[in-house]
Amino acid sequence: MKVIEVPETLDYRSGDRLVEALDGVESEQRCLLSARHLRWIDPVGMITLLGVGRELKRRTGVAALFQAPESGQVSGYLGRMGFYQPAGEVMDFEAPRRRGGAGDSDVLLELTRIGENHDVHAVVERVQERAGAILSRTLRYPPSAVIQFAVILSEVCQNVLEHAEAPGWVAAQSYNWSRRLGRHVLILAVGDLGRGFRGSLASRHSGRFGERWSDATALEAAFIHGLTRFPDQGRGQGIQQMRKQVRRWDGVISVRSGTARIADVPDWEDLPPLEQDLPMFPGAQITILLPERLPEDG
Amino acid sequence: MDSRGDGDPQLDAFAVDVRDLLDRNVANLYSHLVTRPTGRAVRIAIEAQLGELDLPALSLVDLSSVSILDFSCADEVVAKLLLARRDRVRPHRDVFFVFTGVKLHHREPILEVLARHELTAVAGGEGMGGAFELLGAAAPRQVEVWTRVERLGRVPAPRVEEVFPELRERRTVEELVDRGLIFRHPLRGDLHALRTLLKETA
Image (cartoon, rainbow over all chains, first blue to last red; front, side):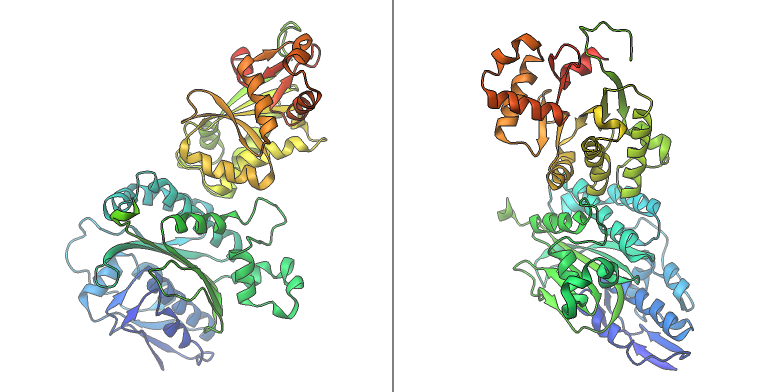
């Protein structure tokens, strides 16, 4: 059995370390995905973990065995984020026993499957009820931000439906990055294991790029230039509008697809604007980080 | 066509409450205009109703019950309805659209899709002080001529040259009529602001 260790920290910066482990996996090989030492995970990490689980099943033909975190806190958090239900669809494991009562959850948006149009409506509906307090009290955004956030959420989820041709997941939560940034940050993650940007755009746009056509050029075409596979001039606005709104909020938006990642990065973050030759991961993963407004932001 | 005299604007009119269409055609659960398939369903429902009307027709699209409008839906509902006017063989070439109940947070997606397709819409709603305005791609001379008609409500045919003494202004009037932003009575040649037609055909 091949053992794949989940890093102690699995977040928007460290997911590629887990994806790298997919490289050596062979057909019919049983894998153990060990999250025993996991100490910190965010929505991006959860979606990466699910994606790796599903990809292991696809490559090997056998569901990987998932070992839940030893930390009750982390395991409980995964439970509150609704991780174990979708995880059970792609991996084998014994669900950890629930600690404490059900109680009210502080989760902004639990891991939710996006497979059809009505899933997007449901997510927008659900998040509206909860996002108000987080956006206005925690992040100090104006009241209108709830609607703008819902629009972003709708567009980012539609990206899965329109381009991936495979279901995906979405999740969101806010965190207090007191040590790292001295502010609260909302993290929104959406991911799928579909055909990715390169696959989606290839038939319409690869010709003009010739030998330069790659995951990175496909991402640039969609992210920077708003190209899509549709001839309709009204298409391709989603990502452009998300970028515009995230920039207004001084946030980060990054899209990883295949072997590349492209991002709009504000001063407070040091992610590179474009990364290539990353470990191959199918589909597309979109990450949005929205920081708390500072008093001097007005 | 109805039995009004030829002094009345010859327009068949119907009002579309988008929320009603949404409820009836998509699902009762949805209270938001989000996702492209939802927008497409709403537009197809509006187009089906337009198909029942005699032309020319006035279509009122009321967004006052829509709490969230995303860019995909704005493209499907607002832009594509207006784009169909450019198609000279399609039946709603002679439909005049007025968008009402436009809230402040609807404006950005609407303005964005109008700009992308170089379209202009007549709209009224929040932050417009009860007035109507041109949203989208319009040159200053078009806005100026449109505003004059809007202020007057109706310009009888014999007064058109008086109100628009310069040839370039009358050419602009033609452009605005062609783009469905002003209605010209097909028999009398009077110019009507779409706003006034809403009242007259109510």
